[in-house]
Amino acid sequence: MATKSILNKKSLTFLETYLNNASPTGYEWDGQKIWMNYLEPYVDTFIIDHYGTAVGVINPDAPYKVVIEGHADEISWYVNYITEDGLIYVIRNGGSDHQIAPSKRVNIHTKKRIVKGIFGWPAIHTRDKSKEETPKLDNIFIDVGCKNKDEVEKLGVHVGCVITYPDEFMVLNKKNFVCRALDNRMGGFMIAEVARLLKENKKELPFGLYITNSVQEEIGLRGAEMITQTIKPDLAIVTDVCHDTTTPMIDKKKEGEIKSGEGPVISYAPAVQNKLRELIIDTAEGHDIPFQRLAASRATGTDTDAFAYSNGGVPSALISLALRYMHTTVEMVHQDDVENVIKLIYNTLLKIDPKKGFSYFD
Image (cartoon, rainbow, N blue to C red; front, top):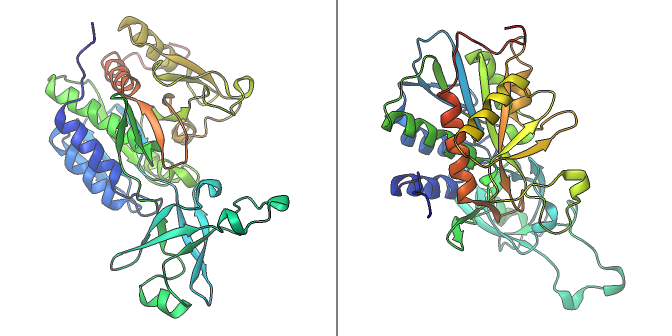
């Protein structure tokens, strides 16, 4: 017998609106406003820093501070060079994949409006099959339908304009969410749902809860680095995405075996504090929440690292969501995993006792 979904119609409407909005690294503010408007009924106050990280706070006067965190930004491009015949060459803003660019439609964000464009590519008939060129950063280009540079600039396009893909939310086979930028606006969605459940279930926490949607993760965890110094948390649970390694061309001996639909992914890494991780595992086992395990050699590559190594060391853990086709416009996650990550964070919070702490010597 299928269990009842914890996501309601309002949740799913928010998810679709939030995902469809562009939120490129360094330009996250419109997405943050959507997120804060949804979160507002479930928190007591907000913290907003100078670069756009947004934090909803429950129990702001409590001395013990717990963070649950995702990041708000998506990968994108910058206009880097406009040729005299009106073509646009780009550089990355985050880990944008040059190989998926040809034939994609784009939105160029100018001061006054969005300018539509396309990543052009030579027709198959005109290419030399004996020395076929692959898409590279120096040969992909955007065409906005202009004859020359002057026409492009009259549209408001200039060097430094940010470029995103317009691909929007859809559901595959009833249970799979697909969109660009699930990495990691799904994290922002999931922590917001935790706040909603706490409010609706009238749960009182013995600590301050800081629901944190950080900016600039895609270019080096920068938003988390900044906001952890502002919050100065005692504990952090971070959620991000990891690779579903069952898709073609991924080496499981190198990447491990993780499968979408098989549950939240709990990481083992130097930055992950062992006692906090074991509390999360005990919570999963106690609530029959399926989970998977993932090992990182040195760093998680997520905001977990930024929180863990801040403020003299903050006990931190990472709960990930298995994702297919990362950094493409068709990123995909399973709804069951989304709901189980929410349940796992929610139930872990209910087990945290500030009096016990997470010292190895307690």
